[in-house]
Length: 268
Length: 347
Image 1 (cartoon, helix red, strand yellow):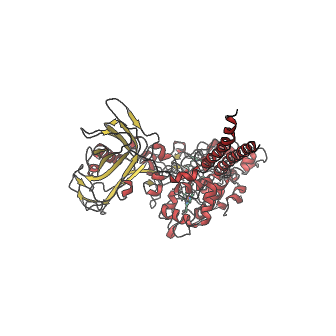
Image 2 (spheres, rainbow over the protein chains, first blue to last red):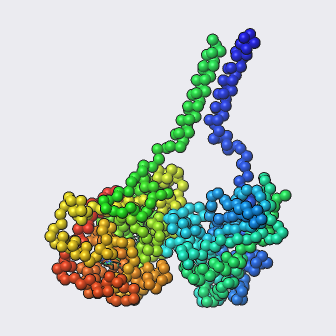
Image 3 (tube, rainbow over the protein chains, first blue to last red):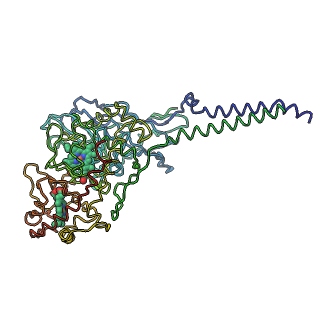
């Protein structure tokens, strides 16, 4: 008793003030958040690079190139929707999918869109797949926002649906001087959405360590739109701007050779 | 003693802090919010096509949609709000114009239909090219012969307007003004236009009676017309060719324009016949100025062709008396409370 009594007298009020202080801190926590150092919000960066002829020639909007049929063309717009990223280790069979699928519009006239940052579980992956296009649900789902905002100019207003990929510009081979490939269509045989699986260039893997960042460089080849498996000549078809056979052929072309994983950088 | 009192005081203050904190959180989250509305579900109507998921109907949302619908700001030169082609006294069709006028005195491709019971509509426009009502406004907003604007320009005009900032906040909880919210609000207003209070509806509910001629017309209608214009919406929302000859200048092939399918050539959406006495002229291009001309067409004008609807292979022969009865019945579909409803008029 003799020992504890003085203790009470001294410490209980202190504890009380302590409690008060703690509650005060909790109450103010919203404001305090602003001072916190932001945590890293991603560990994987996807960098897209426009090219012609695989990774050999960088593409610059406004410059003139030749397609497989020796047709001159000057691209002024090159963009596409991408989503549904999936990483896989084909040896262990482990597959990683993002919990919340989000759409991105890669637009080569806007550098801020040429890099996508995502967070994935650290692991060794040797296969990467993604979808070029917009799923049917979003095509019939009414007013969308963010990357899918119709104000981005990737939406057909009179026959509603998304333009999933766009390559356009000028060409002397076109009677009007312009060529326009607006590729879309989401139902049945007209569906142009393409899921593209790619292996990482041997022998590199995507080797992700906890707390470290990796970068995947993806080249996007404009020439691939015109060739293999289908021949698409500007002289014959300067404008493809509705869903249908030609749109599905162009999508097959860019789906087969239009996207390549050029290199991978793993932060040591 | 002093110790006990200090403890009590501290505890009290501590509890007080907790309480204030809790209250703070509540008031931060629940700022009264927009007031929910329910879409009227008239007797006998099926479940609406538009589900309102993601865009619940609210008083503030409808009010904002109404302002947008009547606002010339949405068009390039300020002269062509939605309401310039969709007039309330014509059940939101264009009064007395085969084709509507838009920007720069250009004509629209088609006759503007009345707007009512749109929440029950599957696909919009005569050719069904628009698969969801939320994105329908994009078509007139950007068409060079209608409002001729671009979406970014409309949004930035709205963003600069203090009144809109207030109304978007009231409807959606913050003053963000973007395409999606604008479309949501217009959709709320357009779907709130429910018309189901015509004489026909009153007869169905037992509070009015058809005259003998109206009753004769109703009987005829049920035997000759309901396969395409079924009650209570008076449309089955299908696309059909009723044998109207192709206009050689406009060359409008209707549904085929959307599907690229030859079998859809010259097919157009079956229009609702509610308020039909108000929505003249008629058909997708407004070629007939009176209902009598439409009936004459069914009776003797139907042109044969590969995609003509099989129901019309032998036309629908009608005597003059039958035409008169049908006309009298169709007039009972006019909902005068709808065209006078102040909730739908210019704010």
